[in-house]
Length: 292
Image (cartoon, rainbow, N blue to C red; front, top):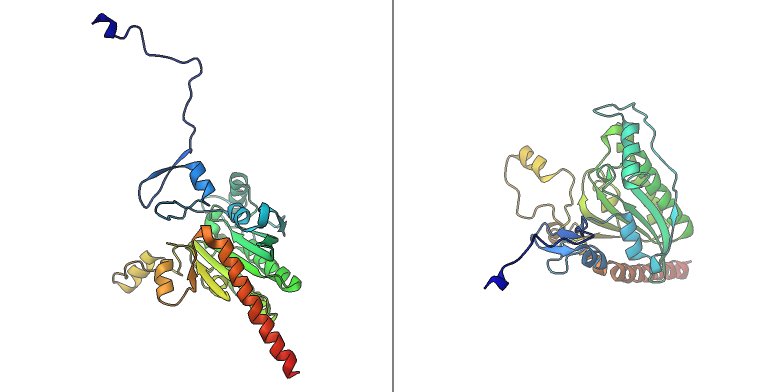
């Protein structure tokens, strides 16, 4: 049986092929491993479990705009250091590092284009930039996006993903809550539709301001939505919280959300809502014209 014995050393190829890093992605909710390409083709949603991975502004823009064609608005705005904030690292240095790491100017981008042939302005936050925290630049870009939608009478979609206010800008960050809310009041007076989409996570001052002020308030499946985090609330009230507390499903059940929309259905659902809102505003205008 000498023919059965392996002779020589292990087989070695001339060009060893290593497995590229990041080609396989583990689903946190199930532990299943999926190919990265499969997730990219499904808008970063697990086909089996429906788990929604975090998606940045580029991903949402590509998903929503027809042929992935859009025009970015209000780029070139960056934060200063009004408070000379220094903790473990000076604020300007941290901003520079995040801009270099993410390729973003700040935690929000604004774009306009066609979605299912409807004109649409999309304001989308990026959690990868300092936790999607809302500072003066975020508030200013959102305010300008609202103004643009109002002036051009184009429906507005704001996609929120944020840990709350940016502590490095102190009260200037908190002022953005009132600023963005006031701008949305003007948008409502102009009868321009506003849809708010809350993704995982949407917390703090963002939830306490523009995120909950939509004509329709939507949430992605499983998204954490609330003001203070569950741990803080639990410590404050000294008791356990209901199961699923502050998830999109819990908020839908208690009337804080209008719909939960899987990301793969987002574009079609937005188109349907815009059609409903357009008809509503057209009827109101007809009534006002009849009265006049």
